[in-house]
Length: 97
Image (tube, rainbow, N blue to C red; front, side, top):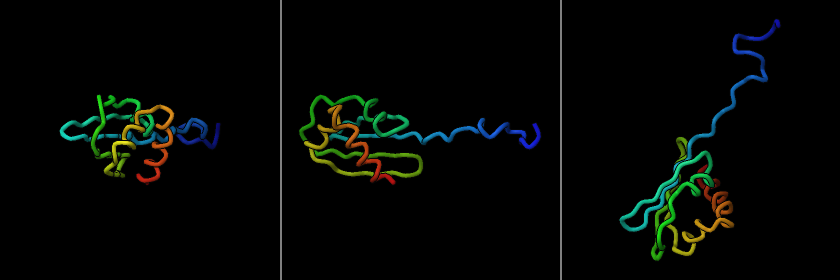
């Protein structure tokens, strides 16, 4: 097996891990947070607030990049509806870049 380095054959190369994504939502005095490999996973791992009646601050940290935004109650409620989660995750992912 000439030509291979000590690391092994090329198909055995290790895959790059995506950075851990931390998602947090601050509503008044309470902070809800979740972690995952993607923004969607972080949203699903976050506990759902009892009610959302005021503006909230959303923070997303992915590796060395971060994003913070104030959102209105309507948009915050949609974050917790399963059919809307992947749409909002894509939007937030673009903003973090």
